[in-house]
Image (cartoon, rainbow, N blue to C red):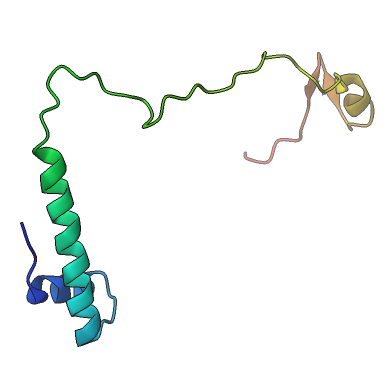
Length: 95
């Protein structure tokens, strides 16, 4: 697949991007190189190869799911206007 300069102008118009004739030519060249690379990659036989989560063989560092901040609920609720059973009570705003 390759794009013509009219295709590039149409794409630019749809994207509402103003492009000069030089930019159309440069964009056409870059997009066609990209399409060529995609075609090259699609031609590679990947049968029997398992999909990878990442291009490199790396592991994500995981940490223990441990709370590090102290529980200050009682202190916060002590200054709240109204609290009941550990919940903040707020006035009704919708009838």
